Length: 133
Image (cartoon, rainbow, N blue to C red; front, top):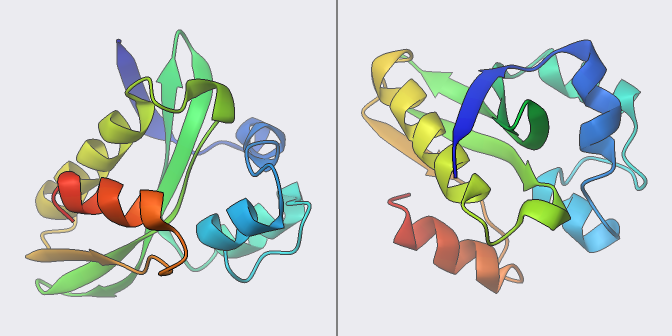
């Protein structure tokens, strides 16, 4: 699959709001969020985030992630990772996570990228370990 990346734009917010399919998915993506996710929640969240990034397939937004908790030249956290349910298992999440790893190293100059993944999210835990986080 051919994926591209760009910075989050306001027109992306309603699209991303449709990705979490239930309260548990929203909690895994955005623990402070209230289901259903709204564009206003994304706008508020982005105020304290870095590099809000979308992954596109054929010019369609299929995933989203960002960073928080940056400590200069030390570490930051990967956050709000979510992929459209229709695109899961098709490479979008791998492409997005690898792009975020690249951004952390090259653009933010951090030595260590971390994340918080709840122990109930077994699929996520296995995925992140497999992909180097």
